[in-house]
Image 1: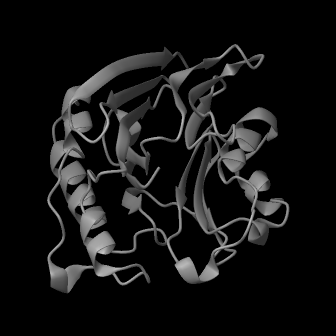
Image 2: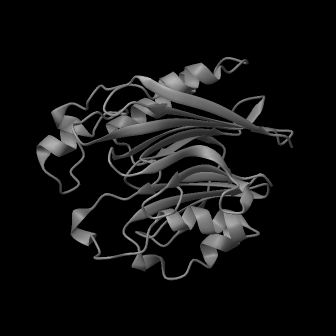
Length: 255
């Protein structure tokens, strides 16, 4: 994922309301969200990166979930690192605890920069290998893009503000949450972050929803978890380089 905004313990019905866009090269092969029965892991739900085999966001039927964003800094790029998508997959397959998984990550510096969110019924945490710190996420509206948690990039500020407005209603419509991140407005030049990439590219990817010739938003996901432990996960995928919906599916896990 490249943009995630979420409300944690803010809404009277939902313990968590999360919206996310995954941005990637259009040609990178991807499988849409589904249960991983083909891999003999029917307890796992999410999409699959068919190039490296990992996940950018996923759930376990026991209620645990995780999501990943890349940290953008070309100056710290590593040659032939392991896939960051394995971090989500390994947590969902094997870890008993969201916090202990982060505490025992094997050599996080071997990966290119990342942010990792992990959740279980005991806690909700953020970790980045750029700081090495585990953050316990407090109630509130938060988000992460390609910098550290809550770094106020224009796209993230816009996403958090839109989410805050949307969840003021007692009844939350999934369609409204999905539409929330379909916004192609680019940041003003004076507000652009400086991450070490050319201006033209920085500008092109400054919007919540990205459309370029070769790279852009591939899918939007919505995750809802109520206080009884019921989970709803929806993924909407788009035709290459457009905001036209290719398909959409919703899965539910009862608490």
